[in-house]
Length: 402
Length: 135
Picture 1 (cartoon, each protein chain N blue to C red):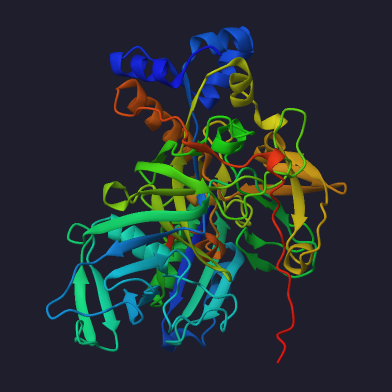
Picture 2 (cartoon, one colour):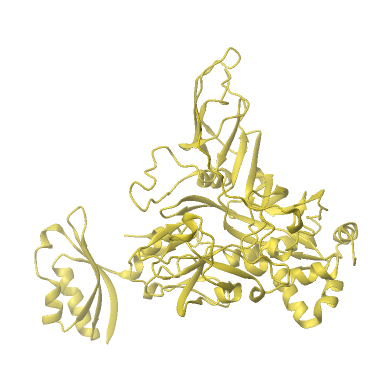
């Protein structure tokens, strides 16, 4: 142990903390070695800015006069349905929700121009949003219809709560078939026409703390331009996948559930996205500080793109049918070079995660820590690691009898 | 020699007349058709790359304008909304003319308007819908 959370926070308060982005740490370790770098640097900042579909926000919109019970009724925000199965005026809007009259893929490939993610972006931007509601009326909540504009500054609470974000590594998607396919990994051209990936690689939070030594429940993070916390492990958390000797998973592994005050976020870091033929998603900016408590943590945080590997997965057949299998393994240095080789063919690559914005997040977080605006938190509980035995299970379909 | 990509709009009354062939016969211009269609308003839209001597080029353009065809340089058609672009890079393997490329040094997406052939493939392939058509 080189230093503790408490010592780091003391240094932050005194303005003496040494912070480096993960990119800067890589250069420092190259120059001076792990041991020296670990002694010099107190905190490493990471960042990622990519589409994260399992995102959403809950609002408490306040009570109308007379009162209405939205719970169990139907609510739309800008014509996008929100979930109402709570008490009277709590609602949840999910990133991928679509207006009832959106044609989806009836005209293939569907455009998905506006959905829940766009509602969240507009709320955060301070724009008025139309709320329409219908309910059944009770003695205590007699009203049955409501149509009003709402604004984030007027509602009681607006909280971003994303049940799966910040994937630790992700597939590199290709299309083996002879037709264009439209996926959440973008437009994939036939016969390995392109290869799409989606990770910040050497800047991505969970790839820099591969065994979850410092990122756990209660970790304070940069979320959507504001402050948030790791609430839990994310859904589909899969720490048991194959790992390289450096501990880094070779396929999608850990995930995080995150939470934070939407009112303090910024639309630059929460962007509604439309995936042709697939649907809507929310592009979320996340940055996580990693305290350099020991040399091992420093070594992991300094891992480079060329030492982070992932699998090439076919999204025309293998992925949709749930057939496991990889067409090969590539590292992020290869992916970021703009071209990889698959079965002897040169395939151009493109990313769906913005590396430029990930760098920007790591730098913002670095500045906040240096200015004493952001203190580190020690996790109150860890998220499950490889030893937990937790796996990502397929659905066991069973016939419904009787 | 000059080479320029232009967008020509033919009003309804001109759609059935031979005009572009005159650019070749009378003005010594070569052309490469990048896109051609009739809009629902029965206006003809033609995107051409025109190649020829500067003088011929000017005369040829003057001729088609005099016939009532509207002429606009192509680069004005597709614009990137820089406020919306997140530089994710999703467009770079979709763009067929290398107008959208990733700068390996800055990791930013560069839009070379001069290389854009206005095929519009990027418009819907861009998740934050930062690529816009301006008519």
